Image 1 (tube, helix red, strand yellow):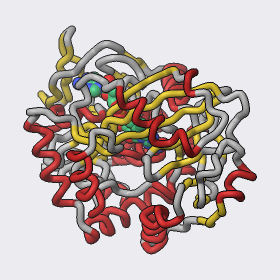
Image 2 (cartoon, protein in one colour):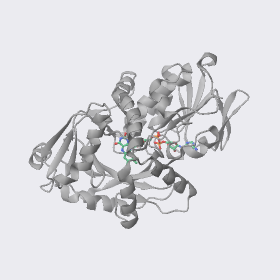
Image 3 (cartoon, helix red, strand yellow):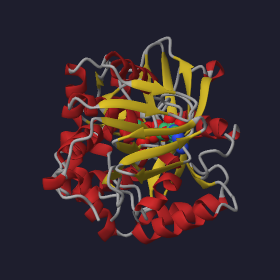
Image 4 (cartoon, protein in one colour):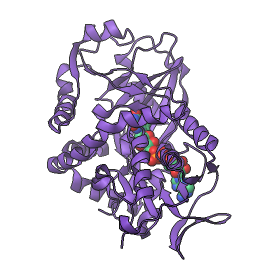
Length: 419
Ligand SMILES: Cc1cc2nc3c(=O)[nH]c(=O)nc-3n(C[C@H](O)[C@H](O)[C@H](O)COP(=O)(O)OP(=O)(O)OC[C@H]3O[C@@H](n4cnc5c(N)ncnc54)[C@H](O)[C@@H]3O)c2cc1C
């Protein structure tokens, strides 16, 4: 049975399993409440999806993934190996279970329900970044409108519908249409083949690897411990404490947060968490940008996002449903270039570097899993899918409040990991 607030005792020591953006944000926020934290990772900070993603902090575009058009993409993925949405063919029974559960959530009614939960989070997301900045995290957050680019005006229907649905959910989003020439006057790298742009105002972006490093530095400076190369195989409650099994023996704490990204399902299975989390593998690379890009661009048809990053730009895309540990498919980088090269000019693709794959932690119903599990002292923080950067700091802040006070913040109720 889950603990009532009245009998809650704030933990003094918390173990955080996973040092991605979500785990590190949880550790950082727990320190705000005076909690001693130890973060363990099977590899190192940022080793999962958090290292080289697109880095958009974009509440306007932060929506649940499962919706009816995913089913249409699913069929196309089977037919075309170059599709930006694909299945890694595998005999993994977890993939079948995940896909079956996700398909059940691909309805308009389910999307609207989930969007109502996202709206509340999206409205608070930017403040949580500001709070980390004010608290000493050396976070370089840039402001920049995201411009979605389309070769043909009719291709914008799906994206515009999504923006309209976000507005219908009650979220303030400022969107304007641009002709191709207007897009080019702002961003000369956009080619003549772009006919229409959709500008989404007031979003932000960052370089995720630098952000993870800044979080890790801040957690360490405030006395937190980060233990690398330590895969945790199980978490349990024993004699009033939480125990995590690692390769060098057991780690003990008053409470534990499982923030293991796309790997979380196995650790959470024994704690009443039934919604599966699986890998939505994405790819990214950078190219040199002698003339800098004005702000992020998004190519919805190719499902590729472009983010400026010092003297380079990063391209991120592809949604490959598959095991986070399956090997990277090199051909994907070529597929991404092929899909967008005609929409850009003055990009020297031969300078491609930093090729990377990371597994987005997708929850089958598209809603993150954040809060207490059925085991007292064991908490989940994950399943943010495409939007763990945008929602990471807020997740840490809300969960730390729940862990230390025993009261579930209203924003977390729909994210109950045991739903
Ligand atoms: C191509 C791409 C583009 C993206 N673009 C954006 C974007 O623009 N904006 C946005 O908001 N989001 C974006 N995302 C999503 C975002 O990257 C993720 O949602 C986010 O990084 C998830 O963070 P996390 O901390 O939950 O998981 P992860 O970063 O995956 O961290 C999990 C950590 O747990 C560790 N771990 C796993 N199992 C164990 C274990 N048993 N014991 C110990 N440690 C363990 C892993 O090593 C890893 O370090 C993108 C993702 C991808 C792939």
